[in-house]
Every structure is written in structure tokens, then in C-alpha cells.
View 1 (cartoon, helix red, strand yellow):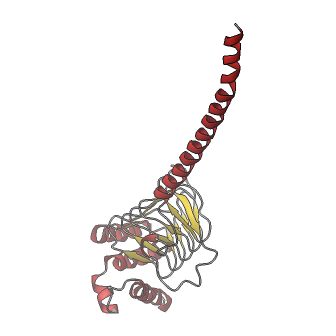
View 2 (cartoon, helix red, strand yellow):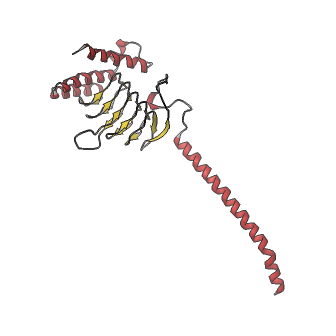
Length: 242
């Protein structure tokens, strides 16, 4: 194995320190972080897979799954500085592709929804953050810098720098460029104040519509009362004549 292989592992260690304030040293990450251990197992399994040692690759991958709780197929494509935080329950499928500087939290699934051969798992471009419990399913593409909120279910392509929440996931905000952001956004959450609660916003819209309809009804009732008032003198005159 080349020096580049071990340089990538060192980059993976440094990425943990950069994105986890609880990490105090490289030694702590190497010895105590199951997310890093899962990446190490993947790097070895992927090397074996690319060199035609398929059974060995699957065996190493399975050992990594048993020890870390992270299931990564050795044929997946993963870039540099992947950070898997808390590790447990994460699944990455065979044809998944992950760019550089991606962050995945626990219970994330990059899964397939088809039994057909070929590309059937997601592609995550550089800088994507996927929150805990989120599921990205099918051969969709998550654009660079996108944020997938916790427990979201994504079944369609996501544009660059978008933030997606809900089931099914919907875009709630989009920044032009996150390359200038210095603060790390944990769990795919936007900065405080960037976005209102989508459920609360829905109720606000509903209240606005109700207020508009109430005002319209009051206006129509007022017009109807004026019409009745104008018609009453005519009714009296007709009674007098009779």
C-alpha cells in the first residue's frame, strides 16, 4: 500500500478533530472513535475489492460491521475526510458515491430501491451533511454543500447548498454558496434564525387564509344587511297600498 493510502487515513483523523469538539487528540480518535474505525475497515476492504480480492473485501467489511455497527459495502466510492459521527446503524450501499468532506451521523441510510444491476444508490457531492436517521434512497444526487435534516427521507435530487427536511423531504432554504461558511452545521441544521419551523410556518399561512376568509364573509354580510335595509321601505309601501 502506498503512502497516499496512509495519508488519507491521517486526513480522516484530522477531519474528526476539525468537526468534533469532543476530540482532543489524534491518539484519542485512532483508539476511541468507531466512526473512524469504520472508515479504516472500509479503506482496507475497498483496496482489496479494487484489486480483485472480493471475498477478502467482503470479509473485512463484515468484521468492520460487527465491531463498529457501520455497514459499508467495499465497492462503494468514498472520498477524503469522511466523518462518521456516533457511527451506529449507518448503511452505505454498493454503488453509493461520497465526495470529500462529507459528514454522516448515526442511523443514516444511503440505500437502493431497485433490484436491478447498475447504479442504484445515492451520490453525495463534496461538503454534504446528513443528519441522524435520514434516509437517502435510490440513484439520486445530493448537491455540494447540501444539508439533509435528521429523519428526512430523500427520494429525489437535491440542488447545491439546499437544506431538506421532512417525509418526504422538501427544500426549506437554499444558500448560494456555503464555501465561505466557517461554522460547522451539526446534524444538517441551518444557522439559528436562518429558517422558521416549517410546521409553524404552515399554521401561520393557514391562520392568514382564515383571517382573509373571515374578513370577506363579514364584508358580504354587511352588504347583504344594507340590501335588506334598502328593500324594507318598499315592502311597507306595498302593504299600505293594499
